[in-house]
Image (cartoon, rainbow, N blue to C red):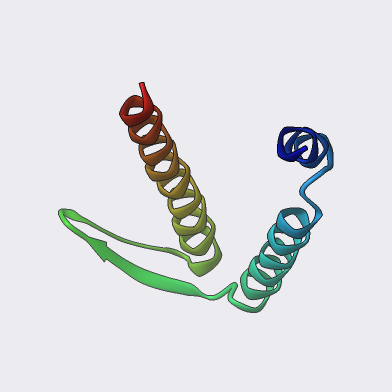
Amino acid sequence: MAEQEQAVDERRPPWGRIIVVGLVALALILFVVQNTASTEISWLFFSGKGPLWIIIVVVAVLGAVLSEVIGWMVRRNRRKGKD
């Protein structure tokens, strides 16, 4: 019975996750629209001046990619532990 319930859950779209991602994307868009000024950028050996919205978008994308990579590594290690 539990296997049947799990199979049904896997076929349903993850509405909770979709809603959360949509809200985060909306918040990011609003934040970017409100922060269009140019600013001084200094990171490691790089220094320059640029629009703040580009930095916000780049950091958000890098954060999402890093989150996915770490999640993938955790899932891979869990699967290796079960084998």
